[in-house]
Image (cartoon, rainbow, N blue to C red):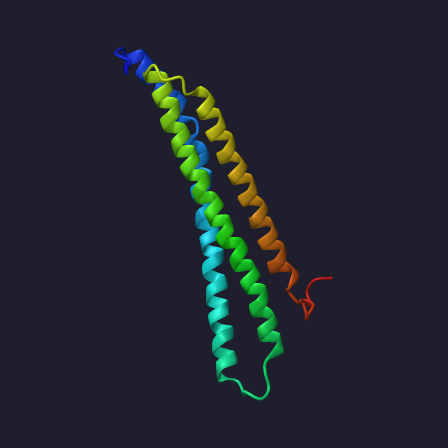
Length: 152
């Protein structure tokens, strides 16, 4: 296998490989956001489960059970979103490696880099769709009972 021996080829390979890193930054930010949402879902589910366990056995708390069902749906979407984002990060990392190797060796890897990059972007878009769906479920179950008297 031939490796590039001049500095220009190596620096150009680094420049090519660095461009997808910006997508990795967005993926990392999304993972942080979605993980925060998952933590809040888990915390709320624990509160509801404690309430249900402390409540009377002969009078089940229907509202709490219904909310737990919504939280379960949201949790599944968030878990799937995190899986897609993680897979996206792996694909983008492989894209970076492929671009660098394609530029600094004789390996013709640009088709593979294209497929990897587009697959990563597809995973990112699917993760955004999961995030949107989870957000819609979260806001759909809100009940605004009181109007703010200062707002007209």
